[in-house]
Every structure is written in structure tokens, then in C-alpha cells.
Amino acid sequence: MALSLKRLGCVVAAVLLPLTQAPAGGKLHHSLAGQLLIASESMSDPRFDQAVVLVVRHDQNGALGIIINRPVQDRPLAALLEALGEQSPTATGNVRIFAGGPVQPDIGFVVHSADYRRHETIDIDGHVAVTSSREILRDIGDNRGPAKTLIAFGYAGWGPGQLEGELEHRAWFTAPEDSKLIFDQDRDKVWDEAMKRRTQEL
Image (cartoon, rainbow, N blue to C red):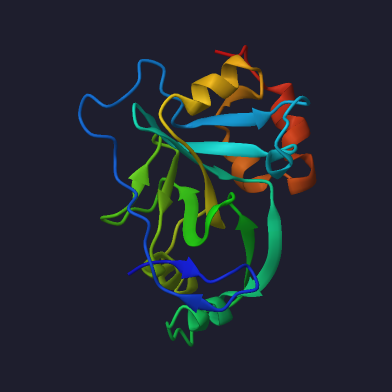
């Protein structure tokens, strides 16, 4: 079942963006899947000002990433499930919803620790994974979900060679994925902390 919000004001329908692994042979020599992209001070696109993006997929067909430092609102998990057409009377607590990027902002993703897996889960690097389904929200509500989660709607997308061009123009720095930055760090400090860990551009 798909995870989809109509808009970040939060009434919902249900669609699933196919998140599939890159085909055999489709990986780039320097795939950035599992890395963080950190918007440089010279980033010209205001949609990515001080953005930190977890790269979920990067192959010869392009790249897909999720912004991890754009919280939008907190919602009761039960209300989010109800908006998605799911009834879960046992779901308690609030979840924070993030704007994951400007592309398809009605499509939802759960970035999570790798202790949880469903058939549709994408294991990014053995530490962090992504699942796009309503079932993961049900499992979170029933205390059967992953230990760490970040719920985002929308994503950042690049066509073939586009991200490489932006890296060449110094629009982004890269840094190794860090679970603490993704899940635990104060969101107002994520960009500053990620900048301290940046590596040389490709």
C-alpha cells in the first residue's frame, strides 16, 4: 500500500513511487547512494538553501535523495494513519513530518534505521534504509517499527549526469552518511554539523 499525502497540510490519497534498486550494471563507478549532499554557500536554487540530502539512489539514470532538515509540522500518528485511510486505535504519540524535496510532494517516504525491513524496503548502506508504504506507519503505531525514523513527503531528483554537473560547479559538498545527523541532531544544526564533516568534492 502506498504512502501519499495530498499536500503538507495533510489530507491524503494513496500512491507509491516505485523505489527499486538500480539494475545490474547500472551503478556508477562513484555512486553517492548512502552519502549526504550538503548545499554549499553558493547554492543558487533557493529550494535547497542550506539543505542536507540523503542520497537514496544514484546510478546511470540519475539520482534520488531526501532532504533531512526541513521539518514542516508534528502530527498525531493516529491522525496521519486515519488520513491515509488506516485505522489504528492503538497508535499513540506524534510524528514529525518533513519536506523531503520539491518533486512529487504528495509521495511519502520513511527513512529509518536498518533494523526494520519489508519487501519494498530499500537498504541504502546497511545502516539506513527507506520504505514507502502505509504498513510501516502501522508498524510504528503498534511499536513494531524501526528504532529510528524520519517521515518525509517529496524528494529531490536529478536526471542522468545532472548531479555530477552540480558537483562540478561546487553546488554541493558530500559527507559520509551519519545516523545521528539523520535522526538525532537538532534540525536547526544539521547543516552546520554536516558542513564540519564535508569531504572534498568529487
